[in-house]
Length: 184
Image (cartoon, rainbow, N blue to C red):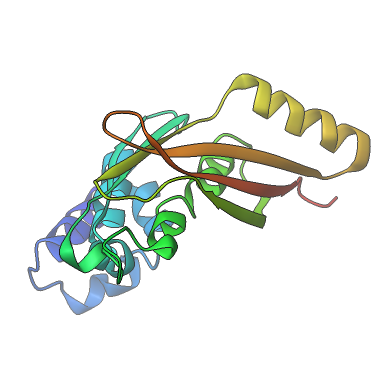
């Protein structure tokens, strides 16, 4: 395991990796996180992910227990549309993966967690940098477990507001997450 860590760390720094260790390199971000066990690494990787990087979306915080995530969309010339407000697609993109990831990391391994539906309601023009915070509560997880006990699956809606630094709401995003335990 220690040899594997050093090969991965060397590869991340751009150092050549011996051909005999290539089979040990992770294939996905989830594999890499399992090796290094860090939400910091996930945050770093997501901030370097081309769709987020090009859209000026920044993951500012992922709590170690995956219960809280903070994300920002920076207002720049390239993130503004024809009339000078933030692109609607970028507003939605900044919220897209996080509820699914948070639920997945707070359930037992092997459970299926997917995005089922999503919607966005634009409230006011986004003319400045905006942010949102995702908070996964015990009540959310308890409701998911109740639905699974009753029907064998759960469909749970989550919502969060995208706001400017002074608290002005720009959009409200809702995501429905589908959860199913492993089949027997």
